[in-house]
Length: 247
Image 1 (spheres, rainbow, N blue to C red):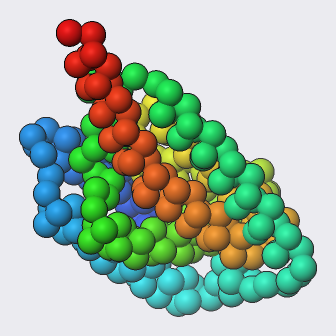
Image 2 (cartoon, rainbow, N blue to C red):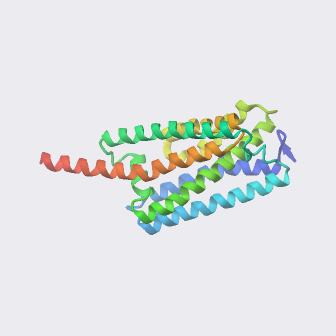
């Protein structure tokens, strides 16, 4: 059984990625944000469960991909042009790192908004101490590898094949599903993640490899996860100091 030329098991996987994963993620984050606070145990449990889920998802997806005969080349697992791959990896990572740091500097200058969804997200979900940061590092490595294997590897190749080799459709479709998985970040996060997914997909097209996207993805997540909480905390302390001085 096929839908638009896509095997039934691939259709099932795509539906899970496009519908079930975004829904479950939104519900889970909403529940966590409603809690007064999260301790180290809760954050570590959240990170660990996400790590386990992503590796299980990769195992299932690549089991079915192997059964259906998808090759390493189709999944972006080869490095056909090492010099180009290295250059694109370093260039993309440097470019996104600069943008991330600029965003964090802007965040430092902004007055903290306790009602902001992203402010609450940073305070409750991102690591706050060395123990959490260590587990978060493992999470970032897992996410960088697994999400690229899933979205720029599997999803991209499925839509490329279904669309007769259309790179444009493969990039747009894989980026849309990738963005949907991050819908819990709100409208701005949805748009940002779509653009980021499209850029990662382009690096795959340029190099025929997932390695540049994996490296850039890892560095972006590490900067966001390890630097943003400190900036947010510094902003809260500064605001509190300003209020105290004005009294």
